[in-house]
Image (tube, rainbow, N blue to C red):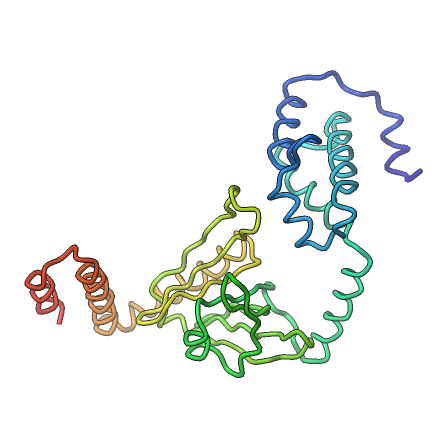
Length: 275
């Protein structure tokens, strides 16, 4: 018996109050029930590295532990999601842990240190990949072309070092902030168990770059760095900024024209105004 279990046994259970009822609702929403587990949650357990043969045992173990901590007053409502994540992470398979240790050693050997967050870069076609990446060590699935990578958020650019299946650097992507016209965040889709949160980087004249396997804090870090650069850059280059804004505006009207939402005369008029 662990020290934590001994401490719990010395504290009487609290009565079933509104806090515990609300906590159980949160747990159910995240994990589902024993009759119907949340498919999205099971997918996330697999992604973290829980063995497929241990999904249901891990589900019961995590649910019971979180519920016990809630009843004993050790857990606040706001901390339930992160506590569930911690317990799932602690139940990764031995194989997953060994693979991570191997990758971490390879990162050291390749000189990849002090990165801001891990990610997976996905593009929609090989054509876009060739435009954006150097020496693409990519893999392909029904959802597109992607590669795991390590992201460095810098003052004037974001650099993503790509890592291939043999744990070696296969190339890198450098995205200058001045080429970016928007950075958006797409949350998990609870209706799609295979979805993931995603940073969407829109670059003028090119298809968006989608960065997967990230969280909202990663997005906020990148967005804040880009906004800081953009504000400074716009102050120092007002004329260039106006040209970029006009180009973006023209592209929007071109899309409307292609979709038949603008007539040729209307599009040409806007084009003349902006250029």
